[in-house]
Amino acid sequence: MCRRRLALLALLAPWGGSLAAQEPATVLQRMEERLDSMQRVLDARASAAVLASSTDTVVAGGLRIVTSSGLRRMAQAGANEAWQNLVGQFGPSVAGRATIPAIQFGTARAAEPGDADIRQLARGFEQAAAQAIWRTQGAEVLNWLRGNVPTGGISPAEVGDLAAELLRTPARPNRACYAGETMACAAALGILVGADTLDAWFEPGTWPRLAGMVYGELSGLERVARERCMDLGDPSACRSILTPARVLPPVGVIGRQYLVQLALQSGGASAFERLTADPGATIEQRLAGAAGVPIDTLLNRWSAGLRAAPRSPAASYQELLLGLAWSGLLLAMALRGSRWR
Amino acid sequence: MFTAILRSQWRESRLAMVVLAGIAVAVPLLSLRGAGAVTDPWSSWDLLRATAQWGAAYPILALTAALALAVGAWWPDHRTKHVYALTLPVSRVRYLLLRYAAGLTLLLAIAGVLAVSTFVAAIRVPLPTLLHAYPGGITVRFFLSGLSAYTILFALSGLTPRMARLVAAAFLLLVLASIVADLASLGWNPLAGVVDALLSPYSPLAIFRARWMLIDV
Image (cartoon, rainbow over all chains, first blue to last red; front, top):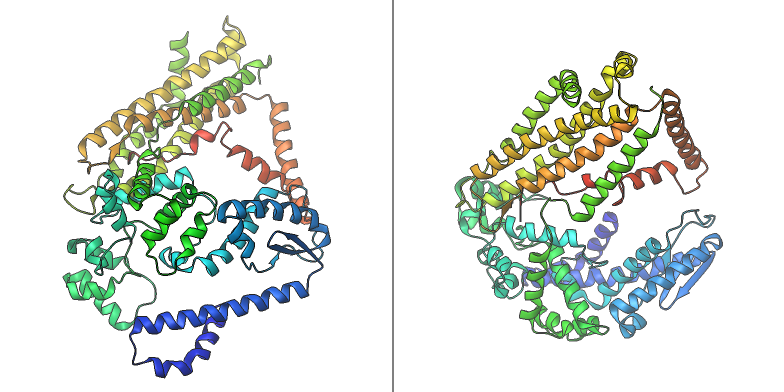
């Protein structure tokens, strides 16, 4: 995959010179667009190759599953369920017009396993198709989600983890957001935040330690800047290293995915269509449009969901009863014997 | 009679009990020792991270205590071929219940030590706003986990040699069946199924599956 990316970058090299004089962000955006368009061509080619080497193909709505004859029944059941879920998630019109690459399932000689889990298989098909739909129709929102497609629901445990994340991360808006201030939640989620993201999110006193959390490939200059920020607290060095792409966000991607999930749930069947309809709309306009409620209401629901998530380690009544029932049963079994060992 | 059996159980398990009680005192206090001032913006970060890191110590402690108590409950009788138990004018069921209750009392004592320690640790640390301490919740979960594990191990320790051999044979059969299933590429593994069942939300060990956080949201 990495090799393919390098090859694509090499192909794009001739444009590099003419782009040099332009703004770095514009150049990067154009290169990303070109890479994306080439990626689509590569996807189409891979899809055609999969179809050519197939032994059997299952179709359910817009889903095409390439599989073996031994797995056909299982693949068909999974594809049907996945397609129903996709229509429910994205709406009939979006799912109907989506171009979903053929999905390869199993090898040519594979046979159906004894403990086949159709639901899990359907979830796999659904996630693969959802990624294709998001990539082609919801690219702007996907950028805000930092490329992480919101597939599957966010579990109550994950919502609980979000609450802990919100109170753990020393970002300016986090505590106010947890208390229910919608504007603070917007800032924490990277919506309606000004140009100076770092200052809007974190107090300068926290920057040196944040710089210590920056990992990954850094140039020599960046490494020097990180050291200066950590050791001396030099604000300009901190700013150069703590770019929006590198700095720890007040709330991670799961928090953003949870907001999108709430918007889609609230908006009903055509919510995804409204989310992606207007290409010029901002993220908050898209989310409010998809949910069919003002963004304040949506953010209120988001923070209320976090506050409602159970977090105490205390055992619930069900756990208490289950533990006592098992203990009683096992003790009765231990007492039942009449012989000494 | 209960006092005599409790005393005998204490004699067998006292070293383990003292060590476990010491750990029960140390874990909560150590887990919160690095807590900084509330004014420090990173205080919640540090506190929650330390609590999460030490969280694994509570279920391990519960399991170890259950193991020590279950072994301690049966060891004197196994060693003396049950002569003492057979000389007592009580039924087998009543005797076993007394043994079980004695072990449970000692488990309760460790839970009591943990309760005191968690309360003291929680009082000593200034908590940032919106974070809460759960000394009671964690103690109750500790006791319930210990109770489940202790009962299972007590039942296993009391098996007759024939039944113990049957259990061991069933386990070996399960392992063999898993190997065969893997070699034959059946796509189904009985051992994995048993492990899944043991970790399922309805198993006797389900109580262990939780966030063991003394400090949390």
